[in-house]
Length: 398
Image (cartoon, rainbow, N blue to C red; front, side, top):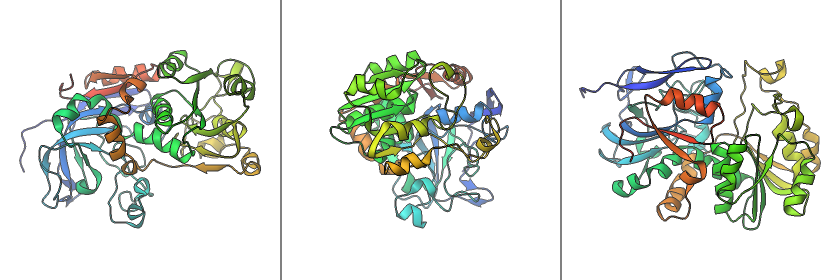
């Protein structure tokens, strides 16, 4: 099919630098072969993620020229001949995991580790280092493969556009935060500690509330982000302050441990207290074992990598961290790692949004920006802004 469209996208240029550039209009193709199971989307919203920041900071092996963006919501403008159930004109949410729907892992619901979409390792994502080479979606148009299997169609496009600031978060951070809580065993009456008050941490905090937690405590070093967590009823701990974490928990809970711990920080963790300016990648994992009760569960949606060229020591450069794992073993902790399988959660979370059971956009403080403003959004986010930046490439979000 011929097209008269141009295309632009956010391109990683090197550590600390992104730019909006002209890029090719997508084709229904994977390499040299046709992609009859795919669709082309006109991107309605696409979000800047903390995972993108790891690359932009130079903390991965991401190559210059990579088109960024894995949080995509869009309108179907073209579809391959094998796409049966998704139609032109449908408004859809795109899971950041690319999944074939055919392999053993996909059939078991483990779409974050699909075996057929990345020659290098299980699992793939749009616009991300080592995740299969797929073109990212911080663009005007993008190609999505395996459309019938992957895409979540919104039942009413007009209704969806009214709630698009919430629904755009279904592509990644809302399911990811929810997954962190589910894998940490959060349920009615739970006491929960969320490490990190970035967008995923805030999404996890509101997810814990949605799951019925009795008390949600969020820890961070950024006062603005802690204030944001307080806005929807969370207790907070300022990690720049000195003091024993068990003592701080006891002040809030009357107990010195929590039932469930969710790590929303990942491999760029820092020490606490007077050493908060010093990177210490195992800090959160070690704190999790100290702060979680015996028999408790630890969900780890925060990203940990196998290669970190900017790490503080040689071991961390290959993902080897100094964990006190014996403590976790002694306390019979359960740890759950890995990418969130977005498709497991995106439909029920969509329903929660549409029926107004949760206001996720308010919780993470969504700010809509233009595609041209994306480099400034990256810089502000990296500077610690308590916002979730949502790019509106075509100026359609009110």
